Length: 226
Image 1 (spheres, helix red, strand yellow):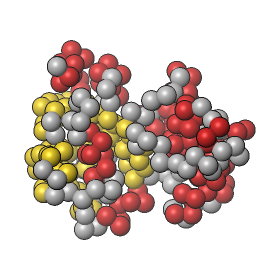
Image 2 (cartoon, one colour):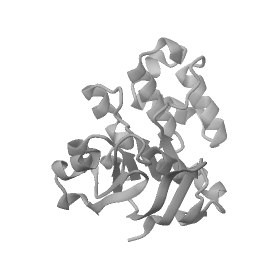
Image 3 (cartoon, one colour):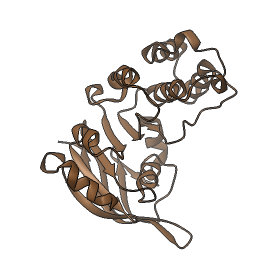
């Protein structure tokens, strides 16, 4: 199987604080890695490094066959990021937000309408986001993440603010059935294990747990938070 991600000895710091230290992982195409860990463990930092938003300070990072940060230009258009914050403009409508990102990725109007319909936001697509519920904004953020049909999804608590019906609605786009390679940051041991092929547990920026999901129980994941 082809490796979608290869990370060896990754380190990233903010001043004197180590956000990630000596983190290594490998993930094959169409597989899902779920990253667990308490707040401040380094989960979001890892996603931002993989998304080419942060430069690694040490180690080797290879995403979809391209070395970072050297070949970040070749990676950015092939990654979909659903961050903890939605990365959308609140004064713009859903359609305007998606059109802005469509221009960045050379995506046409048909695709904008397609993803709006896929997340059931087409009927409210022209209202400013500031007037929409947090769950609706999250659906627009999902649409933005998959707008350019990326082979790799980086998802930070993707079901945050979504009710059960909305979770089912977005599953064809960001769920396992999408067939995409996925890295998911999660605080949900049971749900995360059900999604994962491989698990990485972080604590204090370091690897505290790494194993195939099938070999782990939710109780073992919960230990990361104690």
